[in-house]
Amino acid sequence: MTACRHPVFARVYARASPTLDAQGVAAHRRRILAGLHGQVVEVGAGDGASFPHYPDAVTSVVAVEPEPYLRGRAERRVTDASVPVRVLDAVAERLPFADASADVVVASLVLCSVGDPPAALREAFRVLRPGGELRFYEHVAAQTPTLRRVQRVVDATLWPLFSGGCHTGRDTVAAITAAGFVIHDLERFMFPPGRTQPASPHVLGRATRPAVPAPVGSGHRGD
Image 1 (tube, one colour):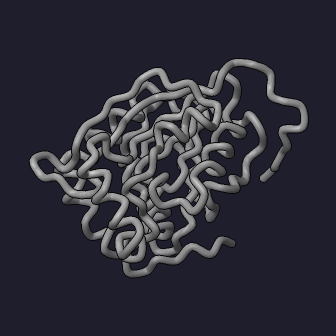
Image 2 (cartoon, rainbow, N blue to C red):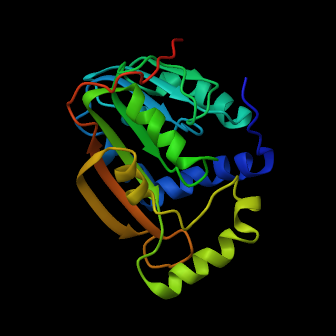
């Protein structure tokens, strides 16, 4: 079992989720899931908001979520999907899957709050088969100096405490590249529309694990 409890934030997030979806989050989730096929691992599945958007070509989805309240909501939403979905208690930094066992890893609004983003991305790289895809939708570090300074201040004070460990200013795009992925598609935009706040800078994209043999001694974890 994991130890990732944010009971107040989890309930606030779940209540806010329909409003965020209506503002555009649901459309962004559909975009990162479009065209997927095969076996998918979704890290930080939250309350299962992505489940209805998986295309029929997906063979199966295993969604990991360590927060108990959100995981319970996700488990109740598996029937919203048109593909088989299973929800597990696990963290992104230690995925309970074998090396090269997934065709796709999906990360949606999660890398801002994991305890160790480089470790989470190394795990995503490990469980993907060579040539497999990382689909990501995240809020990230601002590209303007003023908003970047605001992000540094809020991340060093109360934002992570009240937002389930979320950090607004992580350079997730650089971290994805540093983990060994090759980014093919990347779109930057501000969300929500018409209002700027520390978590407004967003990215949506696709990266792949290069199709080369896995390094010797890369390790293996089974179910």
